Length: 180
Ligand code: PRP
Image (tube, rainbow, N blue to C red; front, side, top):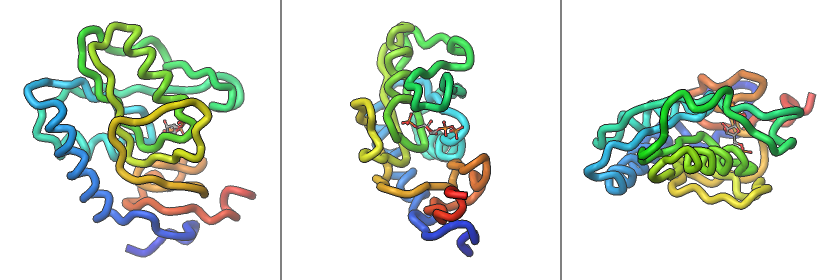
């Protein structure tokens, strides 16, 4: 497939992503054998990964979708909130939080703590991409697909100004697009 004109470099093709999703699904099946976890998608970025991942798993899961937003000027404020209290009851559930990317670590750290404080039996996290160099709070996902480093990553759910989520691959955005 032709790379979008706003992208500088292909990072992971649709085929590479599909192979990684299959691999992660197999590892999750091992972890959750005999259980029915509650798989929670952190909208919007994780939506594509989430739908592919749960369908690649043999384990039966229940699904929920969460929108998380930050107070003030973006996540730099460091205060996150769910749009409302959880739209489901996590008490007693084995929760699997699914993200597209972990940057600062604030979103998953906050959600994990919050779900545990609402009585979740266990909370584990799976992310397709991990950017360890961007961490501002300590956080490690239980499962991750690929490491990424600098640059602005788009595609397969990830956006810049709400564009590029629908690209089937993951790519680096050209600097002139996000600097202007
Ligand atoms: C992105 C991503 C994660 C979060 C990771 O979401 O999908 O949810 O940021 O960043 P963190 O580790 O620094 O908390 P974003 O706020 O861009 O919303 P979106 O998923 O709707 O695009």
